[in-house]
Image 1: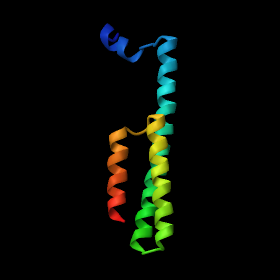
Image 2 (image 1 turned 90 degrees about the horizontal axis):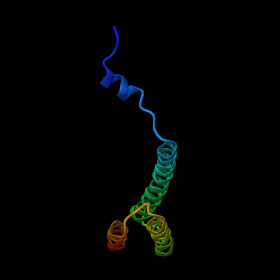
Image 3 (image 1 turned 90 degrees about the vertical axis):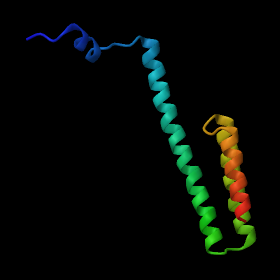
Image 4 (image 1 turned 120 degrees about the vertical axis):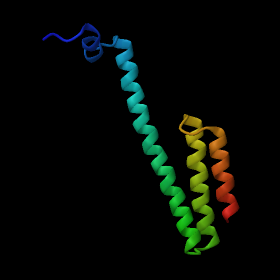
Length: 96
């Protein structure tokens, strides 16, 4: 029995070359952004751990500076929005 035309059209959907390229670029960017976010979260976790273990003030400050640097670079490349970075930095600063 033959499939209805509408159902067949959905499964055998072909994209234009420009749309295929855009889909590939989006996927590559998504994975890159995801990796960068993980790096930032790891840095934040390290900072929080330093606070919890009551390390030296200079050590805690350097970890906070690392987080700030990563967040600012993330804003610059479009991984984070400006307000999210500002909010995160303010909350982390308040914890010191």
